[in-house]
Amino acid sequence: MSKEDLETFRRIWELSKDSPYMAKMEKPDLAFTGNNAVCGDWIEIAFRMKGKKIVEARFLHKGCALSAVGASVFSEFAEGKTLEAVRKLTPQKQLELFGAPVSPARSKCVMLPLEIIKKNPSQTRSLKGEGEVKLRSYKINPSQTRS
Image (tube, rainbow, N blue to C red; front, side):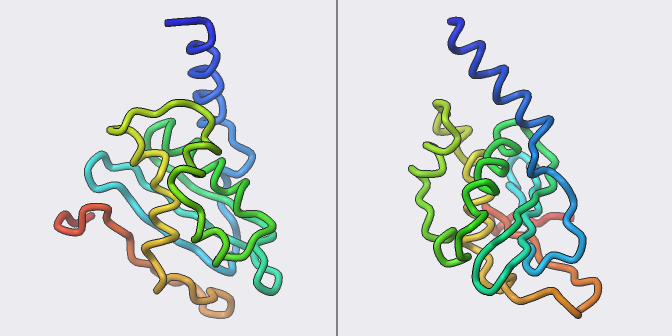
């Protein structure tokens, strides 16, 4: 492993443990949850809105370092944009934001936040004033269920 590879691995590991976007958001305007049914990674992404703009993005995570960093760079990208603009993010751009090479087998980890946002139009309703709302989880493989 080269010095550059080791440095990239170190940065990914550190960001996966100490992302400025990894925190529970109290009373978000929008929230999305999803998991990768194959590996078990789980992410909740929450947005605070001002008009149509995302002014704050946070995520909760349980899973591998790649999905945590994917959620972190996705959250950073989302702030200041509309939900519509965020949904237009391409997989290629998400990988570019990630900033490190990812094998095809692990690219689903990095793509999980993008997949959750794109595949869950039913979760775009406002949560304000609704109290506790249980959101459905998105399954990358719909034939598998999450308990």
